[in-house]
Length: 302
Image (cartoon, rainbow, N blue to C red; front, side, top):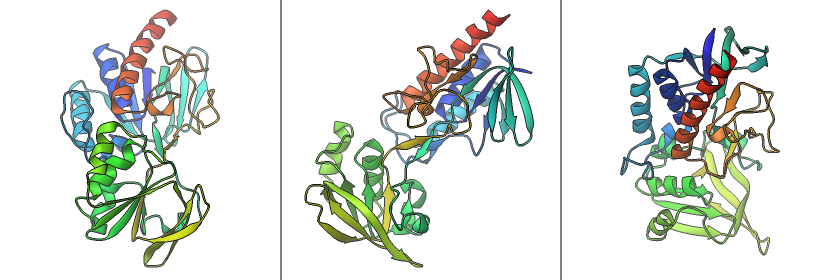
């Protein structure tokens, strides 16, 4: 029986684990794949306080090292469901069940797909969701980045160091990224902008992508854009499908001001919950708050 089980090993989950260990709660962190979460694939983080510039993997290594110093117990398995057993929660995994007084869901989110013809067939053969992972394969070639937020511009700027040309495709007439990123993008000579455009299909074959079919959102005219790679950054979907708690229409978990979900004793923190901002800094804040509230909740149950 653990006092707390944390589901998810990204910045939110690791922060919650660090706070829980410092509070001397008997804690287990469950992670399905690997420590670090989605941010570990980011080439450069420039807006996390204390670091003028650090890779996502580098930052997560710092988090992981601090958690290890505090002897946070980590188990690599998948949380299939959470059952409310009254005074305790039962977390079902492929390896059996785990009991805990409280649970923090910090499972984050995964990239959205375009959902257009040709996309699924060409994932891994030109379609990618991680420039840091796959940018090397497109050295001196022309690629597209689809999206208009922080992630799209950050990864496009990273790609500009590797590829011949970056085509930035955005469905609106303005980017919604932070102003500093927009300024960098506008000054980058390798960028070509395709605003008010959406991808209607991905064209290619066994050798990979050949072109993107674009539609103008105003005129509805279509045209083909020849590229050999396409990196998609159009938002995220939450990793919350297996948890029976109240969610919004997009699957993000609803939580109150202390991050308690509709299941008493189960908290949601970070990118998986309904929140207006999804950044490393907000994930860390959520992890700290959730762990603090778990301590109060457990004390109230004694």
